[in-house]
Amino acid sequence: MKRFHVNVSVTAMEPSVAFYSALFGNAPTVLKKDYAKWMLEDPRVNFAISLKPVAGVEHLGIQAENGEELQEVYNRLKEAKESIREEGKTTCCYAHSEKSWIKDLQGIEWEAFYTFGESTVYGESLMEEKTCCSLT
Image (tube, rainbow, N blue to C red; front, side):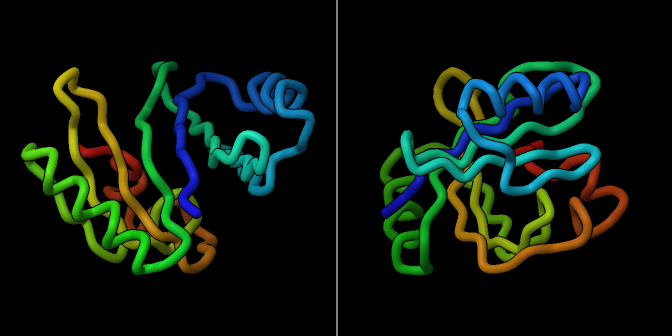
């Protein structure tokens, strides 16, 4: 079963973690100095926050539980007839994933991904850490 994904940029981690922990009634499942993630079952969502200079919705997405589901979601991206950026296997948000990106007609970035492991770093390189979880 796929999971809805939301990533929000925040300008202060501690108060944001406290707010969302209270809102969701749960502590984050991943907590780093610049990133936190809640894997919720009700509602079924992967909600993440990332420390950035400007606050707001970073991107939305659909998280697959396996490669077959990811292919199903990817096929839907192709049906949307917008430009797709195939990122492939990558390290981002302290996880190893395979992902693709698309922008909707309003310019909102959507990520389709399957996570298959944890990482000790936010991104693969210093440059990637700055652009991780972003289409551009």
